Image (cartoon, rainbow, N blue to C red; front, side, top):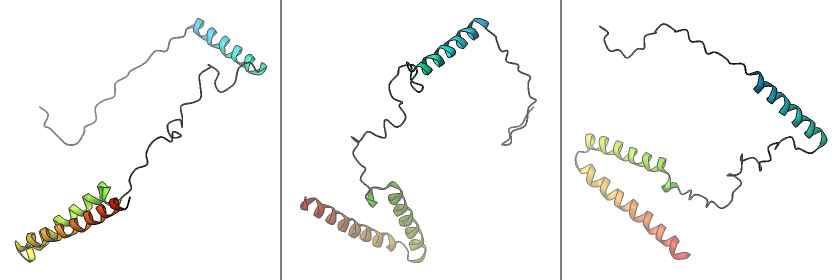
Length: 130
């Protein structure tokens, strides 16, 4: 009976052989096509990079498209900044509760309302100038 464990125990490795098949017809076809492509490239009838006639490479095609609107890089739109502010708010609430008592929640509520009011005041003031 095996007990559950958080450590992985090693198991014996199994021998697994994957056979390779040799197909002489396929090998001959690939050799002939590569030889013909090489001859056509030397004659200039076939370009070296796009030998199959496809269009330009897809690499970089999406990044060169300029129709995407740039992101708004405001400090308050950043998720990391909001997460940091919430973290410091919880830490200050915990230490304030230890040192001051339940009145800290009243103080923090007033502080958050004042900061939110100032933020929205300047935000709407910018929209009024446009």
